[in-house]
Image (cartoon, chains in turn green, blue):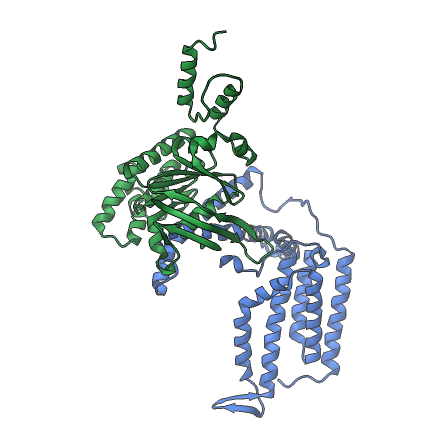
Length: 288
Length: 271
């Protein structure tokens, strides 16, 4: 079943002014329940606008967003309830922290939902553990945390609303490689345990390749591809034309294939490549 | 919503008004304000209005921008106009209860409303055609004599430049933080006043935190470039009075003369 689908979804910035710009142009996207979808595209390709339309933060210029088959703008006064169902973590979310303690900050979303104390407390603890936030940090001021911890606290603040769909906009931006790896692993784990739908926006092919089942490629406000990751990455040439790169290892492997070695296309991770190459070496193909 | 504020915005261009020396522009603005307030009859007022309208065309700024900046103060114009309508001496033309409208009242209303409108147009013309840096440069130069009284003119001008520079940045940031809190279910546009003010706390705190952080970063960056205040500081772009400024001066004197002549030789309106 499609949890999110869009029909001819378009958004125009500054309509009727000389600065008019089409951010999204007639998008038709279907996302199934429980999927992990990566959204990738060049800067200015309309990724951020799209995700803000999916949770009703901005109203489409034309077209429809459906959540579980229902138009989210059917009752504009109820739009807040959509935002609880489609949780959106913004880019650099640490700027949204404001409470005295991390615990109170994570509780802000659930508090807005009107839940009771006990339920809020339960959700805060579970969200903190999903985000990999150590228990003793909960009573600290969010402004005393390190950069990576702040990021986790902010992500926990959205997870605590227990959304059916979790959207993360560039969650690894500005993190060091180790921090990035851990955060991505945690997001994957969250997806596996909660079995809800996750949308990860990124411009890093490596990040997307490591986590997503399907990939939506955005180009100039349009949906250029929406397919399984293997199929997307096998169209490397088209991606390059859009200013995107397939992961380095995928490029190396397709280069090898072009040179006549018997390796599969669409290899996405270094581990996978190592296995493939190992078996080739076993066959003695590199001996000559 | 926040982006609709046009008053005080700079719109780059190459019109003759853009090229005027910013110091001259500030002085001309002051002169125009004086013109507006010494007008004693409709002819003088019409002359100033014609002058300002001519400048509006010379600025090559779309008329829409002026209308937008007027929109913000339309209420003030109408309000003061209507109050003045009932505030005149002489025989009432119309009497509604204790409110009476006299000829002087009507004149007052028209004068006050037009004066405020012209004032706003003239001052937005200055900001539309002058970049914030030019503007503060000019203010710094014009206020320099105050340095005699140990007033730190350069520091004040620098603070103004920085403040103006960060207005759009902070607006953008406010927008972002509001979106982020809305995504967490913040309800910013309903409820009574107290509820709304309370709802703004999650927006204001992060905004202040990041503003302070920005200020600190900026201070460090300035210190890294050996900034140490105004003394001994030279400028890359020096302000010079040119031909165009001279023409501006001539035209202004002509208009001033016209206004004074109108005032002297034509009868003043009943006030």
